[in-house]
Amino acid sequence: MDKDKSTPVQEFELPPSLRFLRQLVTVLTGVMIVGVVLIIALLVIRLNSDPAPALPASITLPDGSTPVAFTQTADWYAIVTTDNKILIYSLDGALRDTLSVTLSD
Image 1: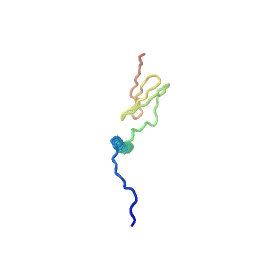
Image 2: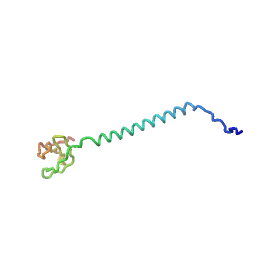
Image 3: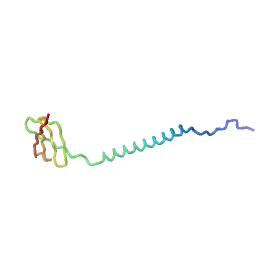
Image 4: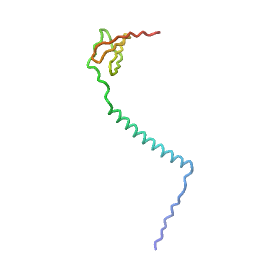
């Protein structure tokens, strides 16, 4: 008769530090999976949201003004110029207000 000559596999218990490390790796893997799924979900939600307000087709600035910055709300947009002025326009392109900015030294 054929006898099984293989050595029996002995079950052994991991030392406490390795058990802790194994649990830590498992938890961190789960957290990373949840994080990646969350980032993908946020990207999908953000990319499917309403688009930003449309930019005006053209903007007519006063002579000699050079734009530095642009900002827009739902009702108006503003342009900051190099001569320290803020030009506020309505969405139809009409100049609503001009603000002069004075910087203190």
